[in-house]
Amino acid sequence: MRKTILAITAAIMFSTNAMAQGDVYERSKIYEWPTDKQVVNKLHQWQDLKFGVLFHWGLYAVPGIVESWSICDEDWVTRDTTMTYQQYKDWYWGQADKFNPTDFNPEQWASVMSDAGMKYMIFTTKHHDGFCMFDSKYTDFSIAHHAFKNDPRRDVLKYVNDAFRQKNFMIGTYFSKPDWHSQDYWWDVYPTKRGRNVNYDIKKWPWRWNAYKEFTYNQMNEILSRYGKVDILWMDGGWVCKENNQDIDMPRIAEMARRNQPGIIMVDRTIHGPYENYQTPERTIPETQLNYPWESCIPLTNDWGYVTHPTWKSPEKVINTLIEIVAKGGNLVLGVGPTPQGTIQPEAVTRLQAIGKWLKKNGRAIYNTTTTKNYHSGNVWFTASKDGKHLYAIYMLPEGEKLPQTVTWQGNLPKKGSKVKVLANGKSIKPTINGNNVTVKLPAGLPQQSVAFEVK
Image 1 (cartoon, rainbow, N blue to C red):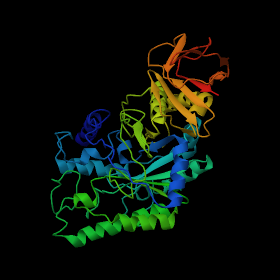
Image 2 (tube, rainbow, N blue to C red; image 1 turned 90 degrees about the vertical axis):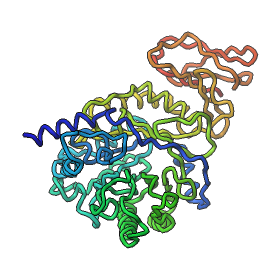
Image 3 (cartoon, rainbow, N blue to C red; image 1 turned 180 degrees about the vertical axis):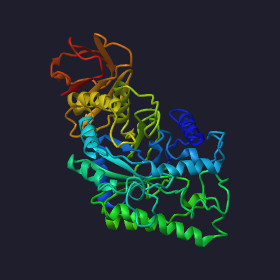
Image 4 (cartoon, one colour; image 1 turned 30 degrees about the vertical axis):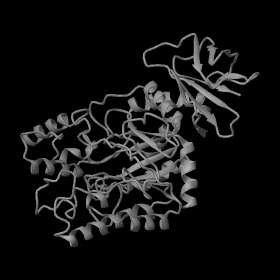
């Protein structure tokens, strides 16, 4: 009975917002273009996609708590005070024997995300807690060796990748460089008093760190050699790096990755240089346009994974976020957390369907577009077709407001004789130009959401 109460208490404490992220990545300040032509070409293909999904799914889904961080000892982390730290970690690791997603349905995931207008997918193969969502040969701490082990689809990474390939998604794999379950990272000989970092002196115990490097290399090799074509290797845990005296040997990893997957995009988050092929501002949008590849990673709720009491973003919020990001030259990857049973919950499906409905009508202003020098005027954001023949002006409707009768913007003046079309209904409208101002009158009957105009 006491264990049950502790588990419930912990789930409440660590559900949505209780650990409002103390771990939000700022983007790197420097960008280095890759020299491999295959990588550059794939980056350009990826930049055209604009909208993707990032799945966090693991042990943390079972109690519906924040992913991994509750077992870290940093000051911003709070825990149930009725348990010792070791008792809490034992409880957390013990979720492996409860994680039995018998309704696992990656085909549903792929259909929902395709209908939402997403074009690429990144799946969390292993988060910081070390629990693998694939059948690793180098640890038994995986979904394939615990409660789900007798299911024919226990090697879930294979089935997730296959389902999204069937929908023509670009495939990405998330991998955590730190592994807090590994004795070669958090060694039980020492307390975990270095927060998220390795808890022993690497210089004193080089053989142990070398064992960890080999373990990490081998697991990355597994996810890049056994599961078909992979387009993106998205590496989290930027504190594991040479600059922080935790050299993971990225040149060796990169050579292996591109031997297995020629042209693969590597994203060594926040570690600027040849292995951060695009930058990943987390939960934020850069203040201005950036002229190199980047992706804002933002969750659909306030949490990356499934939680018991989520705070949902509205479809309008996500659409407006996407508009701003694309106008500034970036991509949006939206975080979605499948349920512990293995499905996408109805509240997420409803929102994603609404986003997809908008994109079906207005996607021409988003996909395969490029930036414009004058990209923003009040509530209007601009993109352009890559051939330069079309300008897109997107009026961003603030949440809770109604569409105005007219929309005005400055700059990006239509040429004489140009046609302005409302993408939502295909109707042509005549712009009024007064000096540097352009005004268009909105036709009646438009849905109460952001409106995209195509200027030929």
